[in-house]
Length: 143
Ligand SMILES: [Zn+2]
Ligand SMILES: [Zn+2]
Image (cartoon, rainbow, N blue to C red):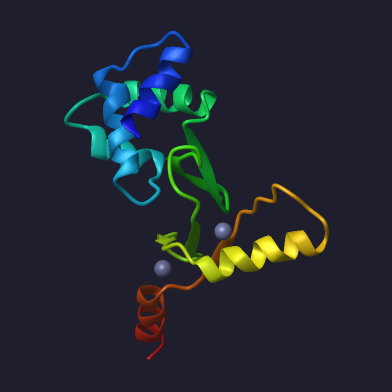
């Protein structure tokens, strides 16, 4: 993955720097993060302005993508840099879980597209609901 990053940067006449390396490393080893969570995670290596600058560069180069959750968003590596996956999001606390690959589901979507004569079909699937923690918090306040 790191070599893929370097080749994308090289193609754009850029080199790998510590901030670029750090942002990529943090995003590749965690669940999707908000901008402030990312800044926090990078804080020992770089300042806030560098995180903003690097993220905006990465969005421009399609290395990073935004996941919109209501009016907020989280950041993750784009599909070119990680295997295809889906998310489960809590609508109350915005906790996001990356679901493991499910081949049955993928085959099903593939077959659906094929049934309608589509080729090179792609999809995005976000599941929303209320997480166990928020469920227990709600019953605790009610009783
Ligand atoms: Zn929740
Ligand atoms: Zn899928």
